Length: 124
Image 1 (cartoon, rainbow, N blue to C red):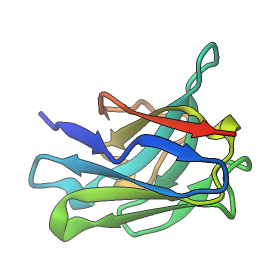
Image 2: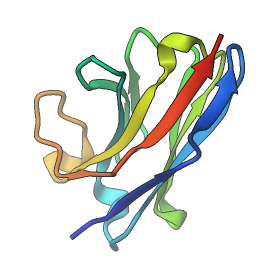
Image 3: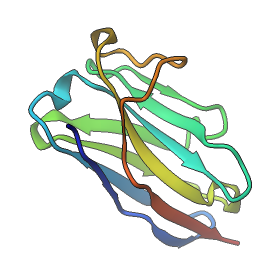
């Protein structure tokens, strides 16, 4: 069983930055594809960014150029650096892991493990 624990959320003013972290348990973290989702009040959960086991990244258009996903396999941790935040980025952010698929994120694939989320609030 893999546990994912997010941290780093909080309140920030528009234009500010935050870095989210997701610490994973387990010895095979380096083989997982990892992703960050977010869910704003009254909206569906959406995929924000993904990173493969090999470090390939993908982003939602809404965050491209502002957010950066990265991973440190030695620390079993994935990060989401968020810059130029705006109120529309306010949401609960969830860390997610996919197992298999040669470490590549599958957009239509099942998420095998979820974190409990961390709240990001951006004030105008």
